Image (cartoon, rainbow over all chains, first blue to last red; front, side):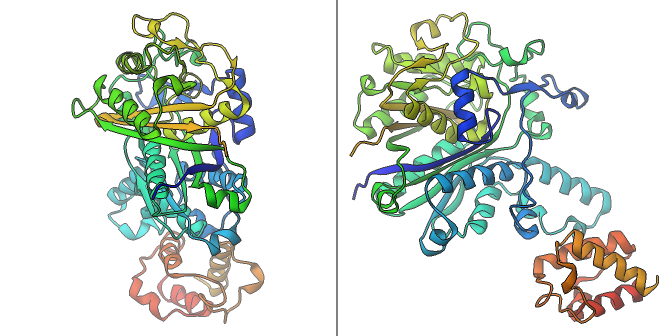
Length: 408
Length: 79
């Protein structure tokens, strides 16, 4: 049983904007969402660079009981989900009458964990933690909260696959829907931005220290890149069968044509070329497409020296002869980590819908490997019918998804 | 501590923290049926009592508290 799988609604709350319209404008203009957080210096961080995002105020939107178990990244995810369901023409009445699942990407929830441990160590009394702490602390915090708020009764769990978490979440939903196990699944990714969650990552010296020019610090594929910039927010996608989307009269955002995955089975933090290549090839095979069929690649490229090199080599292996346009939107957003797979599918779908390629800003000088790729550094008007998005993570987890413009 | 002062503090946290409408707050208001509290809310009430009134609540003692007057009385006895 193979069914066509589509995205029928998207929503986003990111450093590029707090809804699809704002994000579309930022992508088109090549606006950076990166800034400095002086607090990180006091905490002993090597890098003060971060994506900048205000937390939403949910007090008027949710009851106390609904809010109390939601941590920072859950707030972003909630805002994105409200927009995604609205765009998909799904309301609470529909959710009460139809089975909808949730597969959401998330791989940390630092502040509630830190605060609860601090409090217990100080007071020696667990009863003082209150009722919300446990639900905020668990990795599955977003899927557990959103499933209750939106009355979701289908599949329900969190996918934790490092920086490929939410790409895998969409891939899993695609498989379940394609093969008839679910009709509609809410997918997405949430990522906390607070400094405490990023201390250990900063300790690996993985972050850029280009403090004198924050908006030029994220420079994927550029010869002078010096590390990634942590970022975050929430990104949600309603994934469902073509049939159910049409039945509801929803506008189809994109069709999901293929999902590829692989594991490097190699180093815990240093990526290689072979794993991503397998993921790319497997995705093309699943979509029954060749490299020349892809109109645009949204690269994972985070602006780290080794990571971008390995991805450039993998892309050159697969797309070498095609001159496929490539950009990394992380040049503007920074690295949205657990959220990145979902958000970058949304960014790619926006480009496909509005017929442009968002620029890989700060790409000024190629290195040996990126010089072999067609990296787009300026906003380019172009009709896109198929887009491919890569997401890779620690432990060598790789995920690739292909979307296309919906055609009857 | 005087009962009136206890009432003032308890009513205030029910309104501010638990977002309960002022007009449903009364001595004979049932915590679950009238105020809409649920099992997890009692975990937070324990925290607030300890913070506001300075004594440690044993969860099993809360079993007999059904209406607001029971809660005021329980605090009055222990604070």
